Length: 269
Image (cartoon, rainbow, N blue to C red):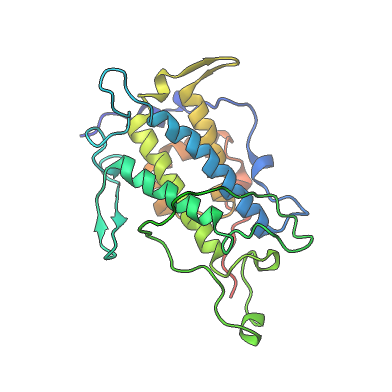
């Protein structure tokens, strides 16, 4: 039987910031949806990178990173949720959490730096507000969809529509966004279930006064507000963290419009 999860208790659901994240999540009136989702992908990836850095710190006693093969032999979020990676033969395999997270980070970096997926030269007046990152090596085994370039030409393309098309994004752009958010969620779920106590419970700051676990909560509630608002994660995806999400929905940390997926979108055909 698993030990109790402190982070599922309301007293540990506090945030390190006041207010809610709706102003940072809601699509601005003059920004195209594809551009806004691209911006969110870059922002949320930057946030999770900072948190991954915390669990990559080496323990003074063991000399090993806090997330290591011995302590985290699988990419898990509790005993009931174990995530696998597809190898080169498209077979699901269990890998240590640090390896899975490394593969995810490289895959996302590869997507964000691929100008075919996230074009760095937006169409005129598209209102693009995202950036790009340099990647030294993005050749990895992927567990997502195939190429993300539009297929078909001329009248065939003219008869179809998709999210982000007007801003120059490819046809599978929204699918890629959802995959990016799903993988970031899995990293959050692993961090909570395996590293909430060590290191986040022990992290403190003095300028301004803060604690690691409240800052972690702030990043995660921001992420979930965006994901739920635009329908980027399914109920099954959310299962490992649902009790905490329910607390935030109940106390309004996740605003009602986000909780009901007010801006949820579907791929247009």
